[in-house]
Length: 137
Image (cartoon, rainbow, N blue to C red; front, side, top):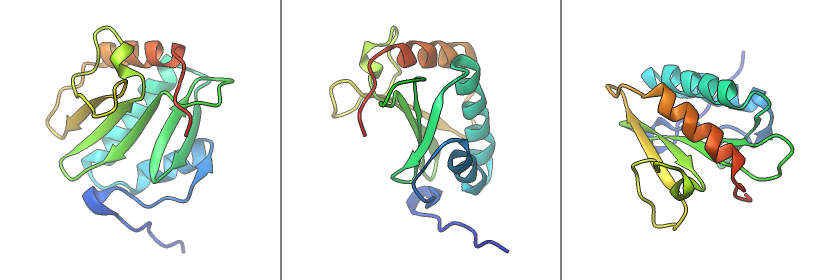
């Protein structure tokens, strides 16, 4: 029997740092309730948009990178009332995701439980973000 991951603030699961799909799926399975279903859907849309996407968990958050790159273009993080999608060069996307950041290039998409995700727009953002230089982490 394995222990359930500790839930940090906002129900964000504490998952050991690791590369590949396995730690990302562990994070998705550990985040409770509707956030797990949403995160599973976001993961599937990211893979649809960038089939060979690189995955890892760092700082208790799934990260996604372009194939062959050593940088990351997108991250997920759980909060109490929403899942935050961070586009690390999101200010360069057209149109940019709606959430501003204190960091010049970062833009956010906060997705609450009752939000109707525009999947076509999300896929376009993911494709475009994967084509930009990513962030080193």
